[in-house]
View 1 (cartoon, rainbow, N blue to C red):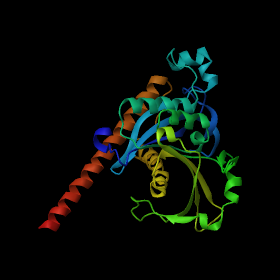
View 2: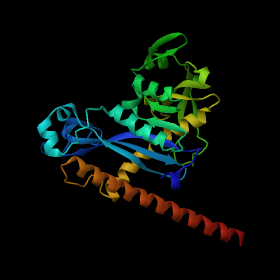
View 3: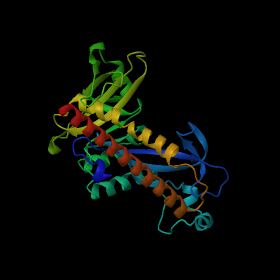
Length: 298
């Protein structure tokens, strides 16, 4: 993915998860747990994934199966499912951090890390990224508290005090015009001058439904524009397309395996197949663009 999609200016790493609905209790890691795939607490496995997206395209670069505590502490189930002895319980955020650490060590050219509110709501996750000087834009719930104007309050309370002119339509620099512009407010939070970084709170509002709000906390270099921050917020949705393609085109969720190594083999092969399709599509687009350019010059 780095070879074909890598781009220093537009590259981002996206943390997200997906569920695999299952029956019975034998599939490794299966348990009644919440998954956005069903929008409910159901019997399923949950995988945490790391995707890479740039202006060239998007695909996955890493994956991890979440092993619930009941599984991690049950020697009989572990042995039957072939869970390696060295595997201990790690929550989803710890799995995400391990995958990000591998990506950082591999030199993946990512300008930002992005994640949804399950990960973004945690100060520990944001702090882990800040310790590494890694810029991020993460969704957060309105109940998160942030310091603003010398007072720490819940985001919802800060937003209620915003004047109407705090919001304005913002079009990201790389927006192709396909998205309807949203209204955004950008508030300065505490700076990190030793690292030359700043923190922001972004509030997204629907122009059709003003009560439809979204919230993001961001940490990035001094001088970052609101257009870039908004663009990164919107680029997070590339991972949803990746999941849809991997499940619909290469069978990411079409398996009946039960053991630990079998799950990793199937999922890894599917991610490789998906990556192959992404690269082939990229090559086809570049070839088509080259032909059009030749035609115009002629």
